Each structure stands twice: as structure tokens, then as C-alpha cells.
Image 1 (cartoon, helix red, strand yellow):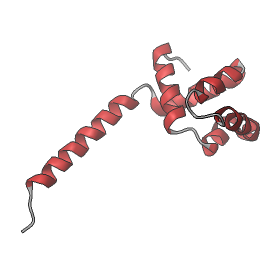
Image 2 (cartoon, rainbow, N blue to C red; image 1 turned 45 degrees about the vertical axis):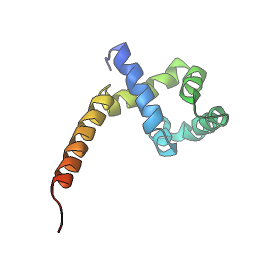
Image 3 (cartoon, one colour; image 1 turned 120 degrees about the vertical axis):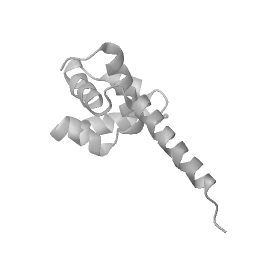
Image 4 (spheres, rainbow, N blue to C red; image 1 turned 30 degrees about the vertical axis):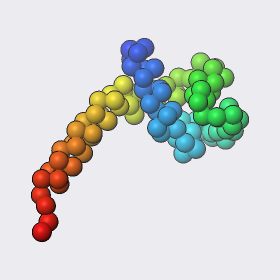
Length: 103
């Protein structure tokens, strides 16, 4: 898989903040998921702030690659733009709802 570094970094963090779960761990690591989920739980036990960084640092390159590839596949660095689009749509809906009044 080819991707730009800044895209991969952004995708990784969006993925870890918004999507990472035990189910995602199973998808990424298959039959090794229990080991990696336990590692995640130990590293996030002290708090989720910085847990993604600690988790990544604990992984070898072999196990970093599938995690980053999954993140890039799901987010592709576009999460922020997608969030902004959703907010614009929701703002438009809110504005439309405020225009109509029920009597």
C-alpha cells in the first residue's frame, strides 16, 4: 500500500481515537487479537491520553503495518473533511427546522 506520511499519521490518530475497539483489534490482528487487546488495555489503563502513541511504540514494524493500513483504508486522511461536511449538513437541517414553526 502506498500512502503519504502525513495522511497515514492523520488516519492513524483518527482511527485510534474514533474507531479502535476490541472488534477492530480482531479485524486487524485476527488470531493474535487477544494478545494485542490485552496490550492495549494495559497501556490505556493509566488513561487514554497518549495510549495510541504508547501502543504504537510497543509494536514491531510487522504489527504496525496492518494497523496503519487499516487506519488509512478507513479514514484516508479525510475524516476531518467528512466531519466538516456532516456538520454543514446538520447546520443546514437545523436552520431549515428553525425556519418552520408549528402553530
